[in-house]
Image (tube, rainbow, N blue to C red):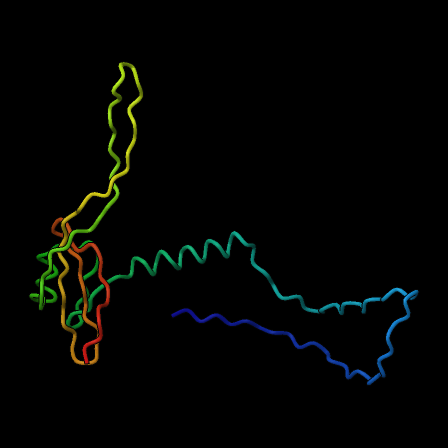
Length: 159
């Protein structure tokens, strides 16, 4: 766990005297009050650095999908065999059809014509394995594709 400390520098605050408000005359232009200068400016980071930090945070969050089974972690990329060894058999297995975009090239009807690109939704068969993690906890749902763990997510809370 990384702890960041940010120092703040106190500014001298002087009490202001109360003045009675008088509206300005039409011919007198309004003058703005001078902006006080800070003696210790707060350090800033460039926007590119902030973008990079935000991107890295999202990437590490997305890659941290795992299912804890008795102190052993099963994560994305593990084989089906490894998942069963670490977590045991699931409470249920459900076959699902996940739509995925697929690019198809259709040849032209005319000689010498350009083929056309068409994007279709293709059904990809996968399995959702559900693990019971105890009373008051969320169900663990593991999506298995092509013999490996594709994703791990939380299901409903068991009451």
